[in-house]
Length: 250
Image (cartoon, rainbow, N blue to C red; front, side):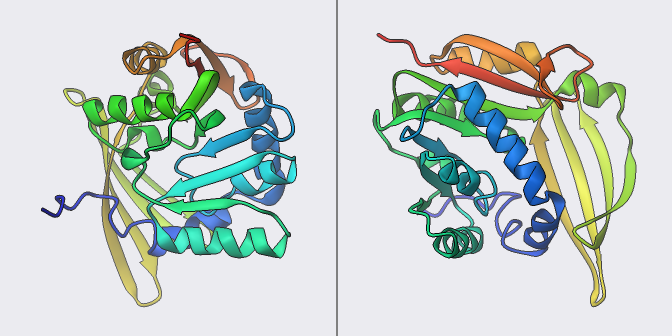
C-alpha cells in the first residue's frame, strides 16, 4: 500500500531546489565540510554517510578531502545534480535514491552525518527509528553528527512572519509554534514571475536536552554538543547545534 503523502513530497525537487543552490556559496560549504570532518574525527579514506545529502553540497567537498562518500536522498533531481557535479570534478561518489527512513546499511561506515535540520522532518518515533538505522549503518565506535536549529534560540527570537530573498527568489514565511507537538508549522509563499506558489512545512525542532534524548533512545552514547556558528561551546543562546554521538563498541 502506498504511503500517505507528506509535506516534503515534491518540495525539494520544485522551487526550493533553486533556493537551496543559491543559499550557500562554495566557501561556506567548504568551511562547514571541514567542521563536519573535524567533529567526526575521520581520516583520509574513511567511509562516511551523508543522509540526507541533497545536491551533495557537503558530500562533494568531503570527497575532495579524501573521504569515501555515500550520499542518500529521496529527491531524484537533487541526486542528478550531485552526480553531475561529482563527475565534473572527477570524484567517485556513491549517490543512493532512497527515503532516509528506509536506509538499510549494516556496519558499513566509519561515520555519518545529518545536516541542516532534516532530523526534524518526521514524527518523534520515526526520528528515533531513523537514528537507529544510522546506528546500525556505523561500525562500532563510529560517530554520528546531527546539525539543526536550537529550539531555545528559536523561541526567544520567534517571528510570526518573515520576508526575504533567497537564491534570487522572494519568499514569505508565516510561522506558528505548536507547543504540544514541539513543531514549527510554516506556510511558505514563493513569489515567482508566473504567480505565487504556496507550500506548508512542518518541522520538529530540538533543544540540547531533546537531541540528547533522541540520540540516546536510538542507542547512541557519549553525546557531545557544540554551538554553531562559529564552532564554540553550546548554550541555550546558540542559534544552531551540532550534536556528535558515538555507537558503543558493544
